[in-house]
Image 1 (cartoon, rainbow, N blue to C red):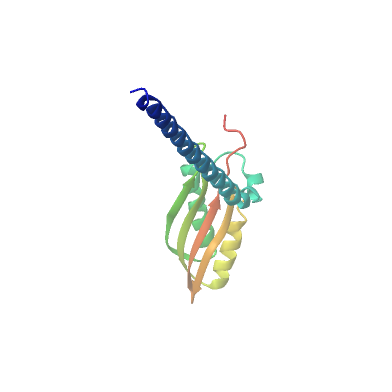
Image 2 (cartoon, rainbow, N blue to C red; image 1 turned 90 degrees about the horizontal axis):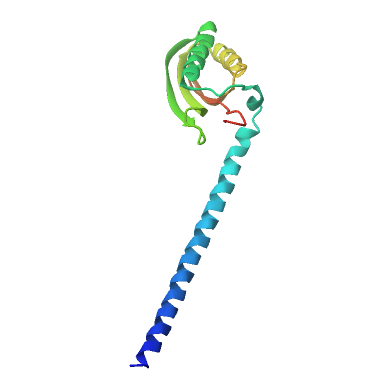
Length: 160
């Protein structure tokens, strides 16, 4: 019986070492994944943080502000003698630190009118001082077009 007890002790020790190695390996792999995700986030945030619109934004924007900006964009297009056939919010991307603040939003507009009016209207929209509004996509056909605007909103550096 004494011979079986030491074998059982050695077996238990070997199993314990194997389990510790498996747990350690799993932790190392997870830490590498977290590091990769952090690098990817930095890479994706780079263009947004370098955007000159960050300097102009003073307060974080919320959904009410976005609706006002949408109405302002439509008003500017109508001032250029364009008929805005439809417009809708295609997507809103919120902040991680505080989800009530927006990072950027996508708005799709369908307009009808002369190309020169569409160009002037889009130039005016991109010149709005609050946030950063950029034409993400524009598909122009004869006397009409479909436009996707990307509106950037930025949070202040400290959200305390």
